[in-house]
Amino acid sequence: MSGPASGDDPARRCAECEVWWARPAGAGRLLHLLPAADLERAGRFWLQADRDRSVAAAALTRLLLAGRLGVGPAELVIDRTRGKPRLSWPAAAVDFSVSHAGDQVAVAISEVTAVGIDVERLGRLSADPAQDAALTRRWVRQEAIVKLAGTAPAGAAACTLADLHPARGYLAALAVRGAGAGVTEHDGNTLLTERAGRA
Ligand SMILES: CC(C)(COP(=O)(O)OP(=O)(O)OC[C@H]1O[C@@H](n2cnc3c(N)ncnc32)[C@H](O)[C@@H]1OP(=O)(O)O)[C@@H](O)C(=O)NCCC(=O)NCCS
Image (cartoon, rainbow, N blue to C red):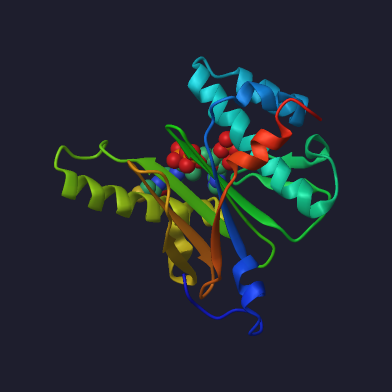
């Protein structure tokens, strides 16, 4: 993604918006990172795969936020009462967005702009691969815009889209508020593995 950044410092531009990718496998070893509300939410899923995605996404989100804010992952309070989940404690100017599909979990996080992310598996929208890719691309871009604000895509004109790099067989997009931001993509599996099984 290109676009104006605050100042000319390349490091700052790179840090504006981070996208972290992880796989849900082994999510059972991350439960100690989650508060009771997240455990209860994950426990509502019938399928193990859904529970694992929920736990991995919550753990990765909490680790990323906690690392920036200097509190324990389970101490963070995330408000899920309305629309887009948002950090409600500690108070901080940080926005995040979560998406998961198949064995892909994605968390976008930024301290300078609002973010919306979506990842989808290919092969669901058309039997024709080229048409499927085009439809899926359009879908993830549209969903990313929706998830930026957590509402209908009325503000599409006021955001910028970037196509991301999920695993083979998936497409993903990121929407950021305004004219654009530096985006870096990271492997979150190491972070999850390092924190698996310990508080
Ligand atoms: C709620 C919605 C954004 C979830 O998207 P999804 O593709 O089903 O699922 P994803 O895995 O991408 O995203 C799920 C995450 O979105 C987040 N989320 C939930 N509601 C949200 C909202 N209103 N806004 C932003 N993010 C939201 C949550 O963090 C959730 O993950 P978690 O429960 O593990 O924390 C989506 O179902 C929706 O309602 N879209 C609006 C419909 C629409 O207009 N689509 C346009 C397509 S052309």
